[in-house]
Length: 342
Image (cartoon, rainbow, N blue to C red):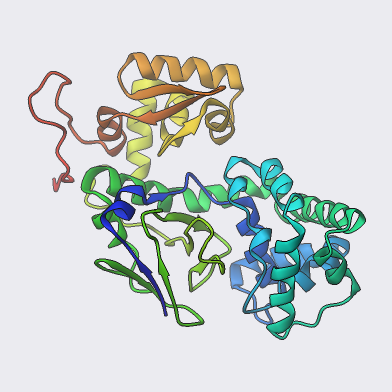
């Protein structure tokens, strides 16, 4: 069992990621390549990957065994900024960390060949081959299907983020069960080994995953930013919202227009204009224009952080997305945290 110990500061710093992580999905999908009996919905995907990705698989599978430990450097925190940022972080891993982590992989019982040992030494040719293999695998294994991976995780992510917005982190942590159980101040999870992680004020990043099946996964090194990758719920509860997803989409399209409604519905948590454009499948200029209109209507708020503009839903925007009435900005009381039962 995995036990994550929270303090009051950790509650305030816990959040749900804006979407699936490309490096976690890559590593966890390799487990499905190893599986003797893959998940039924992944059989066709697995056959295609085995047929078209033999060269990168020959390099990556020795680093990611079928079960048990795999090196933390393969899932860097920098990947939250995108695949290229994550790949740069992987290839910049200090040699001492490469040696330690691949050495741990060897002691866990995984047979290591000369290729893995050359990665452990951090030689330039080995790291170059590793980067090429990770890039090729990402392209072949996901490619156009990455949007489908996002589509499968988005309802779960949005549901938990809204629960946290309206009712707080304590309520959001109670949405996972039965495999992940919130027993304040400890988050318990079914796990292959018995571990205790003390967050110590660092908070916890929860990452929804399509390729994570059955049990959550955490980083092995407790000194790294606390992260828990969890399997998405097949169909998150509607939480009593009066509109179904289809009805809400139709309602918003009539109000905002189809394209602007699509942009609006992809917002959840914090995202940049570039990320908003990618999620909605529109150009960067179009995403910026729609964001401006939504901001003027009081549905989103935008702030500039360094060289990027970040957008997030306002309480009024959240209420509209959920199909619930919200009080006018000048009212004395904030929007209700309860879902309508009508």
